[in-house]
Length: 219
Image 1 (cartoon, helix red, strand yellow):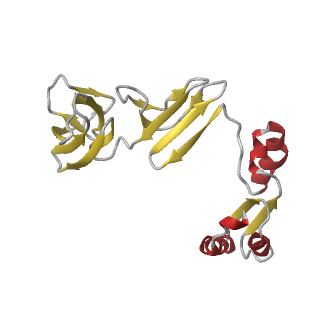
Image 2 (cartoon, one colour):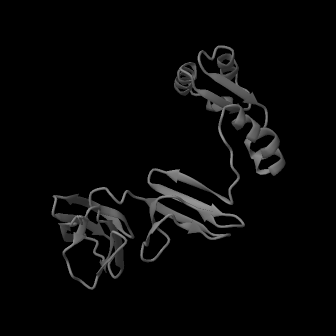
Image 3 (cartoon, one colour):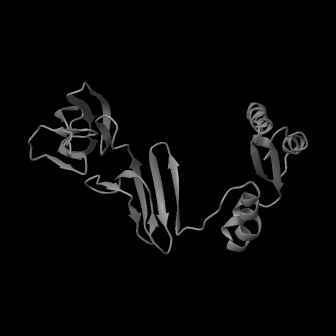
């Protein structure tokens, strides 16, 4: 849409293309056609199709897929789709299970379950937060607001804030540590902790004493 033309964005895209990037554009704009004729080390592919047409499997196969293959992008049909924003991934499965790869917290789970390579069942959607199980101990996700957190090498300290007369659940990644605490509100599983408790608008500070996990040596 010409009304959305941004000279700064266009200049950055042009510089990226001329350094060797490939730009696929649906719809025609004067600046795009100019760039296509002077693309430097890159290239610009222009198609008049509307992106909404690609919801039609025939249009996908005859137009969109060939464009991707033309620039060397393999296009594999899957039984669903996913979209990532930062550490968060939303996934939807169509008529078959949709597999995901990696370590995640299931945000829709009441316990904020930690899972490796989860599968979204057919006809369902899921919201996940990815995490690195080898990273330093930290809160991965909580059902209320995480105000602050820090780890000093032996104690993980964090503050959660939520409405009165409600409870919180937090999922903590332990990394190469184990929890030294024994508490009915703390449950350790799959290298993570689930912590539950009562919320407070003034904030609830949790301190967890952690021990470095012992390395086992086989002779």
